[in-house]
Amino acid sequence: MAEPATQHAALCYRRIGGDCEILLVTSRDTGRWVLPKGWPKKGEDGGASALREAGEEAGVTGRILPGPAGHYFYDKTMPSGPPLPCAVSLHVIEVAHLAYDFPEKAVRRRMWFSPFAAAAAVDEPGLKTILATFRPPPPNRMKG
Image 1 (cartoon, rainbow, N blue to C red):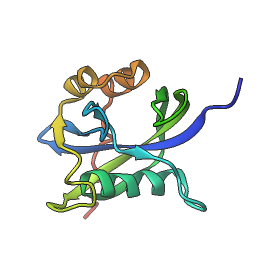
Image 2: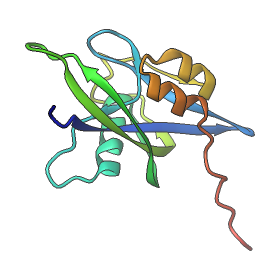
Image 3: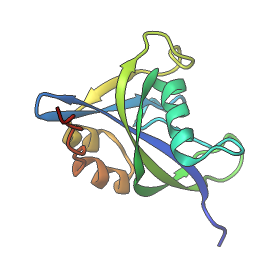
């Protein structure tokens, strides 16, 4: 059995009071709710790939938190041929800004969800578990 192809996804979040919200986008083909994700470019590490995809698919600018937040697997539907097994590495991004205009604005919608609602909105079982239990790290406190 062949190794799954590797993609990188952006788990984009913002703080709302003591809670957090997770940003999901619709897929281009089926309109399902997904995280921004895609293939790494040559020489690009996983976090940079996830941040680039978040910018292209959702207009996100933000800060990548260190280390992957987990992994999940899914079968990517291919235009011709059988589905392609993919392993997706999640990278947490604290959203600083959402641009009004972004490259894939015409083909995607974006929406904020609570972690529980985000888990209910996605299809992939492994991703559901990660989203349902996601808690952002505590905010950095400057000492003064």
